[in-house]
Image (cartoon, rainbow, N blue to C red; front, side, top):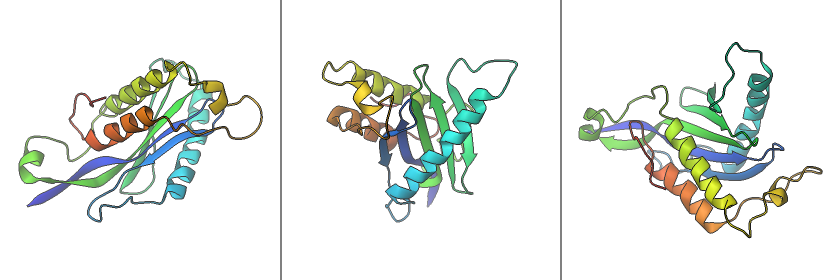
Length: 182
């Protein structure tokens, strides 16, 4: 018998000027195709920008020094968007499909998560930030080309190593994993 556990449906990197830098979708069970189209995920990621802005401006007693915005919003009973913002304004968004990966009963019995606990998304965001920092260390990568201060848009990240890192993060993460291979 098999059980469905949460998996990554989409990982997005959004520039400091709210332009999409990279969007990567992942297949979901049982059809092994993405649950939404790339355009739908793009619109979903754009909708999270309002939540980032509202939470950044909201007065709180304790400032969010970690950058972890936690659950941004639950799209429906199956999808939920989580967010993280770096101190340079780069935003990472992970859309989780709560029934996206089929595993055996043995794996589910080992506590490999039928749901999400507080802090399990930090592994994803730490790995995404590490991949982005590696990208910035490339002397041929100019981040200002990708997030220009004026005008619309900017280029999308097409660096092979960065795309491989993001794909690996989405493919290997599951609830209960302490670290994602990067």
